[in-house]
Image 1 (tube, rainbow, N blue to C red):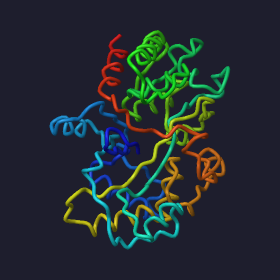
Image 2 (image 1 turned 135 degrees about the horizontal axis):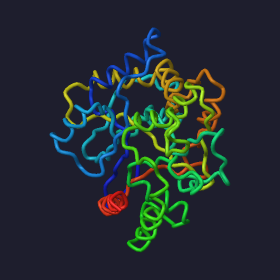
Image 3 (image 1 turned 90 degrees about the vertical axis):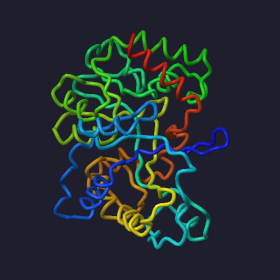
Image 4 (image 1 turned 90 degrees about the horizontal axis):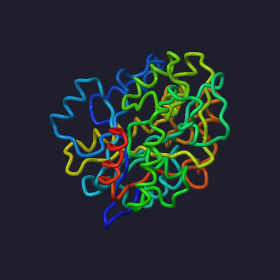
Length: 325
């Protein structure tokens, strides 16, 4: 979360379809479905507000997950919720127990970083520069998101990448345009990127922990790099819609999601971390990759926590110009 212009905006990897949410919750607590992955778990990131017709269109295309900015005024605090806080992070649990007003329940977390084939790729350094390496032209995938400008800024050592000036944005944009020819794909669908990576078309990709899990399951030799410029971390949250008439159902869902079985399922099947600190994935490799023993894995100096971009519309326009170049 980030305060900007007197308001608070939470960047949430939100599951917008209630049916998808409930299906995920049922899978998480069902032992028989522990190895199953929800269908159509794709990544889509709108650069501006979508209309109802546009939401319907992407849903018809099979997209069931998006990342959206949530205005703080659209959610409400949850008073008197009977949650089991024993397994959550101590800062969250103590705030809830002492009656401090809270409006979001941490759900999961992860990193934006680089996935690469260790049998095909030999990085010169652990750096975001691998996404722009001329040696691997045509084997690289970028993410279709204005945060590519942030990644460029991190690599170019531009201070405050989420608050760039016009001149700094121009510098980051020119760099991306000059390197666009190395990218075989600019992915908006995680499924498309995973398919291309698994087929061998891609060796390097801007990726999420789930992609590392999926490629390892296909027996590929892959590394999920932590760039020296630091990965970009995110925290997904559950929020109660303002004025909702079904508070008890929302509380029941949040409580189920926060349980240890749900948390372990998420970690094993997607490689994302969970707010439940008692959960541990079955794989020790996954434990190390998620840094689950480090409570500060998603914050400085270990990672840059994703945040609000006050000039988001300007960034979005600059990114569209990169793609059109």
